Amino acid sequence: MNSLTSAQPTQEQDRLIHLDVLRGFALFGILLVNFAFFTSPIQSIVLGPDPSIQGVDAIVHWIVRWLAEGKFYALFSMLFGAGFALTFLKSEQRGRGNRAVYFRRLLALLLIGLGHYLLIWSGDILLIYAVLAFLMWLLFSRTPQKRLWKWSIFFFLVPVLLMWLGAASIAGMQMVGGDEATAMTAQMEADMADMQAAVDQAAVILASGSWMDNVRQRVDDLMFMVETAIFWIPSILGFFLLGRWLLVSGRLTKPTDHINFFVRWRLWGLLIGLTLGAVGLLVMGDEQWAYPTPTMALALTLTSVASVMVSLGYMSTVILSVDRLRFLAPAGRMALTNYLTQSLFWTWMIYGHGIGLYGALPRSVQVILALVFFALQVVFSRWWLKHFRFGPAEWIWRSVTYLHAQPMRR
Image (cartoon, rainbow, N blue to C red; front, side, top):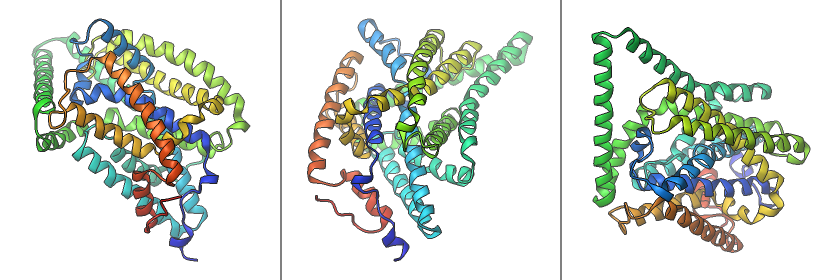
């Protein structure tokens, strides 16, 4: 039997139900957070909280940032990292020739992510996932299990250390004073003014531009993503490696053998993580993270630690409660389809080339819409999987990966 016929997708009876439940849970949190970026340019993330959000909406926005921002993308990234690691391990077990399956899987995801980014929304994460999964294989495919979590901590620290270095450099120059300090301050103020102008221009395009205007804007957004990559790519790679460690250590494949691990992280991950996250947001205030200050460096340190701890706390809580949360599994099995659908539907509803609700959805209303829409996705996913083996996007992904059309109907 050749490698192409021996390599097959995971069969339904072999699926790890708790991973599907976790993906479903993460999808809801992703939608909660992404709503804020469906309704504003992606560059606005560096400008701090929107001062126009007031009253109840400001409270809701703060709660979403506290409970969800940076936590669910972390959980989603860990699950993708674990999934890629599982695919690679299976390919290795079937022989070196099956390694091509892993790379076709990455290439297919890269193309899906590129299409999502250019045609739908610049907040896409799939493109980066495909690139970092290749990087994980290139640099860490032979890394011993006990070192994986240590490497993940290293990558978590990279953006934090860079922020502290930037803050120390600027503070030192300002203490010395002189023309150089004055010029530096003037340049930073000019850069922030340019960023605000870019955000304002992008907002006009989102609110009233054509679809092609938005495509061109997303091409421009790519430069912003590249310029700020050092502050978010290391963290995603860190979560990939943490997810891989959780998988190869058996914690995600045989969670019942590691109950004490999950009990501890449910308690301490949520108790300490949520506390640090709240303090970090209070310290951050309305600081602009593109302007490195000691205050911003401290806030980033606290929120970064909180993201790791809370995401592990959420993971542990879901795994320990998986029997009560099994209704999320169908949405998790169709995670790619549901993720793309969230972007496609809501950008069409919000952007000017669609229904045009840009600026008309208060933050509190966004949370309600996210709840309702995700509930519909859960119901739809359950119905779909009664009739079909895969979600539409999952079917395309698997068919490209295995170089033949997968059986779709049950």
